[in-house]
Amino acid sequence: MGRYICAIDQGTTQTTVLILSESIDIVGKHSSEFDQIYPHPGWVEHNPEQIWSSVVKGLRAAIEDAGIRADEIAAIGITNQRETTVLWEKATGRPVHNAIVWQCRRTEPMCEELRAQGFESEFQDKTGLVLDPYFSCTKLSWLLDNVDGAAARARRGELAFGTIDSYLVWKLTGGRSHVTDPSNASRTGLYDIRTRRFDEDLLEKFAVPPSLLPRVEPSSAVVGHTAGVPGLPDEIPIAGIAGDQQAALFGQLCFEPGSAKCTYGTGAFLMLNTGEQLVRSQHGLLTTVAWQVGSEFSYAIEGSVFVAGAAVGWLRDGLGILSSAAQVEELARQVKDSGGVIFVPALAGLGAPHWKSDVRGVIRGITRSTTRAHLARACLDGIALQVADLIASMDSAAPRPIHELRVDGGAAANNLLMQIQADLLARPLVRPVALESTGIGAALLAGLAVGVWRDREDVKKNWSEDRRFVPNEETEELAALKKAWSEALTCL
Image 1 (cartoon, helix red, strand yellow):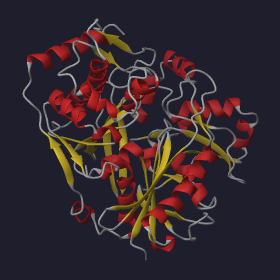
Image 2: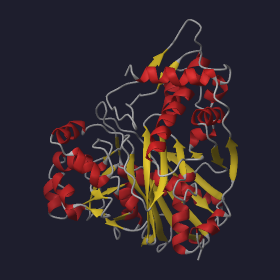
Image 3: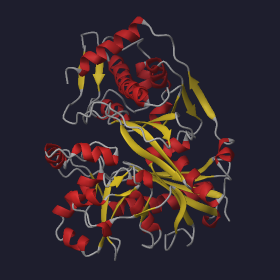
Image 4: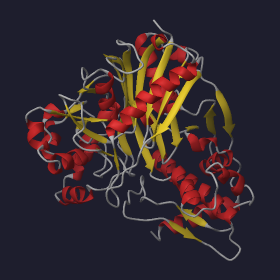
């Protein structure tokens, strides 16, 4: 058996394929972007076949970059943008429509109608989610209602539904495996996290025929084998599946209840492992499945910031005050603080704990002395303040206090942002050497399933810390920043 693990990290804007060694070193990597499709304001779609092409391209390029043979791969793990919804033909594997992306807001009227019916309480009790277009159930219902013949074909058993993980496993196995794992199933709005199965009443409410659904398998288990994939031999085990944030939690080795991580990417995603305890939050946080490994079923609570790194992208592309996203740290360091400027980066609404999809961003406190550097610093403050709101909500819901926060994602490379975050949270941040925790988590789940690593203690030997950000004592300036942020939120 080969001793390398391949991880497919299928994200919102790009697909990254990693090749990892037994020592959890990334020896090969390739990333490729694909089109973002905006048919109407607030609508977001992806072409699933373009996503599949990016996976095939990435597999070949990452294996070449690693300098290994494809038959040296012991297993494949998959992690994916969650909630994004695909409907395809079982006979051909062809999608019947573009995938509807998690960011898409087209089903807001459906959610409003369901709330008006008083359905939200039952929905939240079963799924741990809020009734929002974010999740898959209303997206799937929209596809069945709006794609010609889709509802009838679904009832005849001709179509298959899945989040991106299910679609990729189907493609990798030549249509032999239609599966998902509990972490992804728990994001569909069709899965009861208490009974750990798709719920008949939810399926009926959203008019989803059961024949559409994937089989739910553990997050770390062999669920199929490659068949007919360009550049790969047949019969490589597909052995790990987890939604991107759950995979990052696993990749950060947050195995114990009470451990937490935050991934800073396009958005920011905070997740706390609650173990076997299913914790309900009264503060706008989600209760979700972390993973299933063997018979161990772990839960988590989660908060999502819709816009984090995307705010830096807006400074670059929208305002033109940055030549690259990486420049934001250098520019923000030119000033000691934001000069009284507050930026609430609600460019796509506010996620947890506020859940205000209709609000938009605000910049307050601009004067004649405000410079590009002050805006850059206010942007970093705004990202960190959103996460601080999440932590405050999570502290009130968590069974025990969060003593440290592990961080990853592209924006976690920004040392100034991480120090601002540590100061606002008044607790240390720990950044690993490898920031690709999402892909690493998928690889670990797959490698554990096929015996590349004996157990999680074996995995821990190879994880290493890059830097620990220790909080400074709170100053008057920091207290003023928190107060100004609270005042800005009341204006939304």
